[in-house]
Image (cartoon, rainbow, N blue to C red; front, side, top):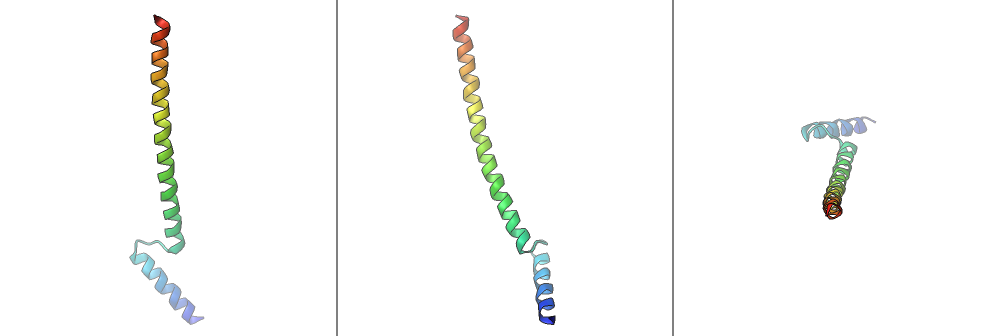
Length: 66
């Protein structure tokens, strides 16, 4: 039992030295960073689609005005 406590204390001390994050928190941080990267990538694609649609509407309006 004492050995477990010592081990946990050492793990916590190492985590604090490494920025205060323990192993599960580091895993969650990595997962959230990956999710953030994917969402930004999807958002970029959506922005490009929006720009294409805007340009097509402008062309359509110009064509209808002739």
